[in-house]
Image 1 (cartoon, rainbow, N blue to C red):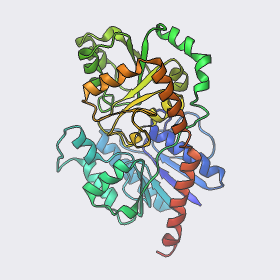
Image 2: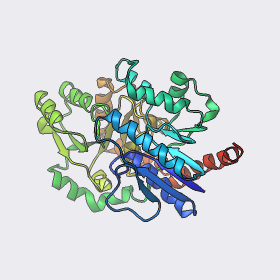
Image 3: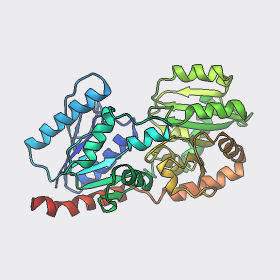
Image 4: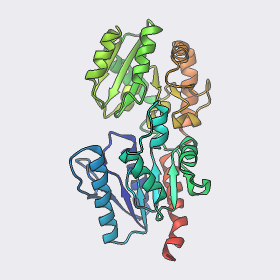
Length: 370
């Protein structure tokens, strides 16, 4: 099978790219020919799958999305593909993985829906394109959002949660790395180290609400470790304004995040809206107790109080404080962490690749008769 995957930015700093990579290498291993069309790519990448460059205008986000989509359409019309699978704002494909329902995301953040929002216009074009035969969502939450806001039939949508590398992310790393990580970060044995990680958009991931909680409900032992790719100057200023700067540690993007997990006591990921959330699932595989919101798709895999803690909403500061206070108990952390690991082990990338291939296989006969 010859497969085209479309994604504007392909790097290993965001969950979308890592997900595409994990599926693509498994399909390639099964002798399928996978081509990844992208504008940005890693410096080093295996010969297979094949990376294909698509140009776009280096202007605003709308211009970049529009010109990348146009470039992809030219490329996929120039040669035959059995399946075209989009991962982003591209309009024309057989299958699309919806990683964000923009309408639902904007409403969850209290934003109005503009009739002139070009991204909403492109989302509508994507979901109503006659070529589109199947939509993959990462959670039932997003499936319901697409049905609610776009009237898409249930039978057209398949929910396939992301997987996790349960070998890379493993509790057994803790003895080897915990002391070094905590020493490097200046953490004492008594500190309750809580990790917040995001590749970008810290505001949408609820970081400022964590700051508010720390100001209003101070947990004396808590230290918040913030890692990821967003601009941190704003957040340093906000932390200083709220008098919590001395309880925060800011880190850049961390390549070996699994080692950082070893030095942490818990992870908090209080998103306003997140279609899935690879970050919490990876932390769970590492044996960390996680705190997520009900608006985060990965919460569908979690049983509250058993293998994680779920907040009603990111602005539920009392609930956030109560969850963190509970996790100061080392015995409770250990119990929830063990259960979290057991849950994470059920979600493998092999299974994701198999289910994705099944979607492709179901569509091939219909494509060949049109």
